[in-house]
Length: 214
Image (tube, rainbow, N blue to C red; front, top):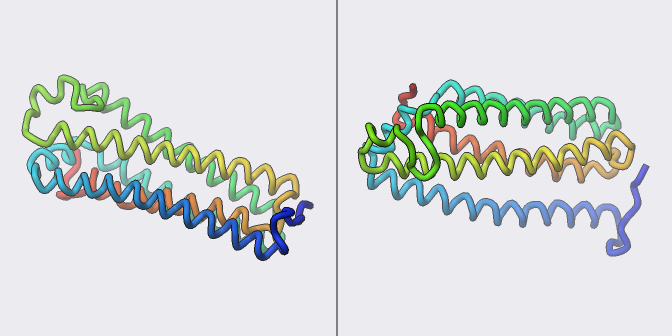
Protein backbone atom coordinates (compact mmCIF):
# COMPACT_ATOMS: atom_id res chain seq x y z
CA UNK A 1 0.00 0.00 0.00
CA UNK A 2 1.23 3.44 -0.90
CA UNK A 3 0.03 5.91 1.69
CA UNK A 4 3.25 7.90 1.68
CA UNK A 5 3.31 11.65 1.69
CA UNK A 6 5.22 13.55 -0.98
CA UNK A 7 8.25 15.47 0.26
CA UNK A 8 6.58 18.81 -0.45
CA UNK A 9 3.75 18.11 2.02
CA UNK A 10 3.77 17.90 5.81
CA UNK A 11 0.90 15.46 6.07
CA UNK A 12 -1.49 13.33 4.05
CA UNK A 13 -4.32 15.74 4.88
CA UNK A 14 -2.44 18.67 3.35
CA UNK A 15 -1.57 16.61 0.32
CA UNK A 16 -5.23 15.66 -0.12
CA UNK A 17 -6.26 19.31 0.26
CA UNK A 18 -3.76 20.34 -2.44
CA UNK A 19 -5.10 17.68 -4.84
CA UNK A 20 -8.70 18.78 -4.30
CA UNK A 21 -7.82 22.46 -4.65
CA UNK A 22 -5.86 21.81 -7.82
CA UNK A 23 -8.80 19.93 -9.31
CA UNK A 24 -11.25 22.73 -8.53
CA UNK A 25 -8.94 25.37 -9.99
CA UNK A 26 -8.61 23.29 -13.14
CA UNK A 27 -12.38 22.84 -13.36
CA UNK A 28 -12.85 26.59 -12.95
CA UNK A 29 -10.80 27.12 -16.11
CA UNK A 30 -12.86 24.46 -17.88
CA UNK A 31 -16.08 26.15 -16.81
CA UNK A 32 -14.86 29.45 -18.29
CA UNK A 33 -13.99 27.67 -21.54
CA UNK A 34 -17.38 26.02 -21.95
CA UNK A 35 -19.20 29.15 -20.77
CA UNK A 36 -17.79 31.00 -23.76
CA UNK A 37 -19.14 28.33 -26.10
CA UNK A 38 -22.55 28.38 -24.44
CA UNK A 39 -22.63 32.19 -24.75
CA UNK A 40 -21.81 31.89 -28.45
CA UNK A 41 -24.63 29.37 -28.87
CA UNK A 42 -27.08 31.69 -27.11
CA UNK A 43 -26.08 34.65 -29.28
CA UNK A 44 -26.50 32.80 -32.57
CA UNK A 45 -29.71 31.12 -31.47
CA UNK A 46 -31.19 34.50 -30.58
CA UNK A 47 -30.23 35.81 -34.03
CA UNK A 48 -31.34 32.73 -35.99
CA UNK A 49 -34.09 30.89 -34.06
CA UNK A 50 -35.56 29.32 -37.19
CA UNK A 51 -32.30 27.80 -38.38
CA UNK A 52 -31.54 26.42 -34.93
CA UNK A 53 -35.05 24.92 -34.74
CA UNK A 54 -34.36 23.05 -38.00
CA UNK A 55 -31.09 21.81 -36.53
CA UNK A 56 -32.79 20.45 -33.42
CA UNK A 57 -35.46 18.76 -35.55
CA UNK A 58 -32.75 16.98 -37.53
CA UNK A 59 -30.89 15.64 -34.51
CA UNK A 60 -31.92 12.26 -33.12
CA UNK A 61 -33.46 12.81 -29.71
CA UNK A 62 -33.28 9.08 -28.88
CA UNK A 63 -29.49 9.07 -29.20
CA UNK A 64 -29.11 12.16 -27.06
CA UNK A 65 -31.50 10.89 -24.39
CA UNK A 66 -29.91 7.45 -24.16
CA UNK A 67 -26.49 9.04 -23.81
CA UNK A 68 -27.85 11.25 -21.04
CA UNK A 69 -29.05 8.19 -19.14
CA UNK A 70 -25.70 6.47 -19.75
CA UNK A 71 -23.70 9.36 -18.31
CA UNK A 72 -26.01 9.83 -15.33
CA UNK A 73 -25.61 6.15 -14.52
CA UNK A 74 -21.84 6.45 -14.84
CA UNK A 75 -21.84 9.35 -12.37
CA UNK A 76 -23.60 7.10 -9.90
CA UNK A 77 -21.19 4.21 -10.36
CA UNK A 78 -18.07 6.36 -9.99
CA UNK A 79 -19.51 7.99 -6.85
CA UNK A 80 -20.27 4.54 -5.47
CA UNK A 81 -16.70 3.48 -6.27
CA UNK A 82 -15.36 6.30 -4.09
CA UNK A 83 -17.81 5.32 -1.36
CA UNK A 84 -16.67 1.69 -1.44
CA UNK A 85 -12.97 2.57 -1.47
CA UNK A 86 -13.36 4.80 1.58
CA UNK A 87 -14.75 1.79 3.40
CA UNK A 88 -11.83 -0.37 2.39
CA UNK A 89 -13.69 -2.35 -0.24
CA UNK A 90 -11.13 -2.08 -3.03
CA UNK A 91 -12.48 -4.95 -5.12
CA UNK A 92 -15.93 -3.42 -5.27
CA UNK A 93 -14.37 -0.07 -6.16
CA UNK A 94 -12.45 -1.68 -9.02
CA UNK A 95 -15.61 -3.33 -10.33
CA UNK A 96 -17.55 -0.08 -10.18
CA UNK A 97 -14.77 1.79 -11.95
CA UNK A 98 -14.79 -0.85 -14.69
CA UNK A 99 -18.55 -0.35 -15.07
CA UNK A 100 -18.01 3.41 -15.29
CA UNK A 101 -15.43 2.94 -18.04
CA UNK A 102 -17.78 0.61 -19.92
CA UNK A 103 -20.53 3.24 -19.74
CA UNK A 104 -18.10 5.87 -21.00
CA UNK A 105 -17.23 3.64 -23.95
CA UNK A 106 -20.94 3.12 -24.58
CA UNK A 107 -21.46 6.88 -24.67
CA UNK A 108 -18.67 7.33 -27.22
CA UNK A 109 -20.00 4.47 -29.32
CA UNK A 110 -23.48 6.00 -29.49
CA UNK A 111 -22.01 9.40 -30.32
CA UNK A 112 -19.88 7.87 -33.09
CA UNK A 113 -22.96 6.17 -34.54
CA UNK A 114 -24.82 9.47 -34.43
CA UNK A 115 -21.99 11.26 -36.24
CA UNK A 116 -22.00 8.50 -38.87
CA UNK A 117 -25.73 8.99 -39.38
CA UNK A 118 -25.19 12.73 -39.87
CA UNK A 119 -22.46 12.08 -42.43
CA UNK A 120 -24.74 9.67 -44.32
CA UNK A 121 -27.36 12.39 -44.55
CA UNK A 122 -24.83 14.93 -45.84
CA UNK A 123 -24.34 16.85 -42.59
CA UNK A 124 -20.68 17.64 -42.03
CA UNK A 125 -18.77 19.98 -39.70
CA UNK A 126 -18.55 23.55 -40.91
CA UNK A 127 -21.94 23.44 -42.62
CA UNK A 128 -20.78 21.32 -45.55
CA UNK A 129 -22.81 18.62 -47.29
CA UNK A 130 -25.90 18.11 -49.43
CA UNK A 131 -28.21 18.53 -46.42
CA UNK A 132 -27.61 22.26 -46.47
CA UNK A 133 -28.60 22.53 -50.13
CA UNK A 134 -32.19 21.79 -49.12
CA UNK A 135 -32.02 23.38 -45.66
CA UNK A 136 -30.58 26.78 -46.49
CA UNK A 137 -32.31 28.76 -43.76
CA UNK A 138 -29.98 31.19 -41.98
CA UNK A 139 -28.48 29.68 -38.83
CA UNK A 140 -28.73 26.01 -39.80
CA UNK A 141 -25.06 25.79 -40.77
CA UNK A 142 -24.05 27.57 -37.56
CA UNK A 143 -26.17 25.19 -35.49
CA UNK A 144 -24.36 22.13 -36.82
CA UNK A 145 -21.00 23.87 -36.66
CA UNK A 146 -21.57 24.46 -32.95
CA UNK A 147 -23.03 20.99 -32.55
CA UNK A 148 -19.95 19.22 -33.91
CA UNK A 149 -17.60 21.59 -32.09
CA UNK A 150 -19.22 21.40 -28.66
CA UNK A 151 -20.17 17.73 -28.65
CA UNK A 152 -16.79 16.85 -30.16
CA UNK A 153 -14.95 18.74 -27.43
CA UNK A 154 -17.16 17.06 -24.86
CA UNK A 155 -16.29 13.64 -26.34
CA UNK A 156 -12.60 14.50 -25.99
CA UNK A 157 -13.21 15.31 -22.32
CA UNK A 158 -15.00 11.97 -21.92
CA UNK A 159 -11.94 10.20 -23.34
CA UNK A 160 -9.61 12.12 -21.02
CA UNK A 161 -11.85 11.21 -18.07
CA UNK A 162 -11.75 7.56 -19.08
CA UNK A 163 -7.95 7.62 -19.20
CA UNK A 164 -7.83 9.19 -15.72
CA UNK A 165 -10.26 6.63 -14.30
CA UNK A 166 -8.42 3.75 -16.00
CA UNK A 167 -5.15 4.84 -14.36
CA UNK A 168 -6.90 5.12 -11.00
CA UNK A 169 -8.50 1.71 -11.48
CA UNK A 170 -5.05 0.23 -11.95
CA UNK A 171 -3.72 1.97 -8.86
CA UNK A 172 -6.67 0.83 -6.75
CA UNK A 173 -6.30 -2.70 -8.07
CA UNK A 174 -2.61 -2.77 -7.14
CA UNK A 175 -3.31 -1.36 -3.69
CA UNK A 176 -1.56 1.94 -4.36
CA UNK A 177 -4.74 3.93 -3.76
CA UNK A 178 -6.53 2.81 -0.61
CA UNK A 179 -9.04 4.19 1.85
CA UNK A 180 -6.55 6.64 3.36
CA UNK A 181 -5.62 8.00 -0.06
CA UNK A 182 -9.09 7.84 -1.58
CA UNK A 183 -8.90 11.58 -2.24
CA UNK A 184 -7.09 10.69 -5.49
CA UNK A 185 -10.08 8.71 -6.74
CA UNK A 186 -12.46 11.39 -5.44
CA UNK A 187 -10.63 14.00 -7.53
CA UNK A 188 -10.99 11.82 -10.62
CA UNK A 189 -14.67 11.35 -9.83
CA UNK A 190 -15.16 15.12 -9.57
CA UNK A 191 -13.75 15.53 -13.08
CA UNK A 192 -16.10 12.82 -14.36
CA UNK A 193 -19.07 14.54 -12.72
CA UNK A 194 -18.08 17.77 -14.44
CA UNK A 195 -17.99 16.03 -17.82
CA UNK A 196 -21.47 14.65 -17.13
CA UNK A 197 -22.73 18.08 -16.06
CA UNK A 198 -21.57 19.66 -19.32
CA UNK A 199 -23.59 17.07 -21.24
CA UNK A 200 -26.67 17.86 -19.15
CA UNK A 201 -26.50 21.36 -20.68
CA UNK A 202 -25.67 20.16 -24.19
CA UNK A 203 -28.56 17.71 -24.27
CA UNK A 204 -31.47 20.21 -24.20
CA UNK A 205 -29.66 22.77 -26.38
CA UNK A 206 -29.03 20.35 -29.24
CA UNK A 207 -31.85 17.82 -28.83
CA UNK A 208 -34.83 19.21 -26.91
CA UNK A 209 -35.28 22.96 -27.52
CA UNK A 210 -37.76 23.75 -29.05
CA UNK A 211 -38.90 20.32 -27.93
CA UNK A 212 -39.02 18.41 -31.19
CA UNK A 213 -36.75 15.72 -32.55
CA UNK A 214 -36.48 13.44 -35.53
